[in-house]
Amino acid sequence: MADHTGPPNTLFRWAVGAALLGLLVIYQSVDDSPVQPPATAAAAPVAAPAPSAPAARQKAKASPTLPRSRPTRLRVPQLFLDAPFTELGLAPGGTLEAPSADDKNLVGWYRGGAAPGERGSAVVAGHVDTRTGPAVFLMLHLLTPGSTVDITREDGITATFVVDSTQTYPKNAFPDAKVYGDTEDAQLRLITCGGAYDKKLKDYTDNVVVFAHLQSSRTD
Image 1 (cartoon, rainbow, N blue to C red):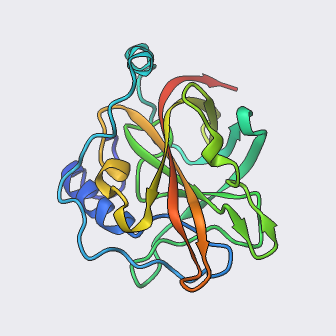
Image 2: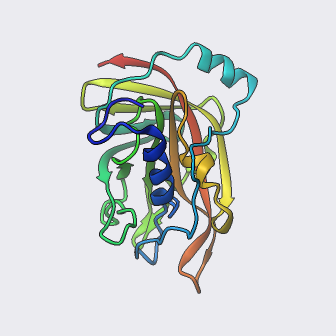
């Protein structure tokens, strides 16, 4: 893990990160109340799911990881998506802050984890919809392996990620360690709600997670 503010203890950082992020970075259309973390979480980093053979070959050719820099813009050509970033931290109760529901075209980066392009799993979350209609990650579930995700950073570098897989998980069986665990390379997780909407719980039943890895970078 690249250098961050605070003790450079990767195992501790990701054990705590998995616990804090185990709350699932999900935003719902009717109830914007904070989501509580689960009672248990991964105690050690776990690698992301093994990619397919083509993806593995792409990873072998991937550019070196990048230094830490704040993301400023997300572009997904396949979905015609172009959105600015906001930073997400932790609320006083230990829950993750959500992007403002007042802006439907806004994604959030968890600043306590890896930055996009940095070694580790960078977490980016967004609403699937809000009280006023569809939102930025409405079509996230349609991303297919081989699709690209471009993230422009504050340092002027654009990191291009290639999608390995798009998975849907029941919220009551969310694989925290698989999604949030540390990795040997630079990876990306795009997360939103999925499945049916449960009116009683005021929440969606599933989470959609896009797994991607850094393919290349360029200076704009």
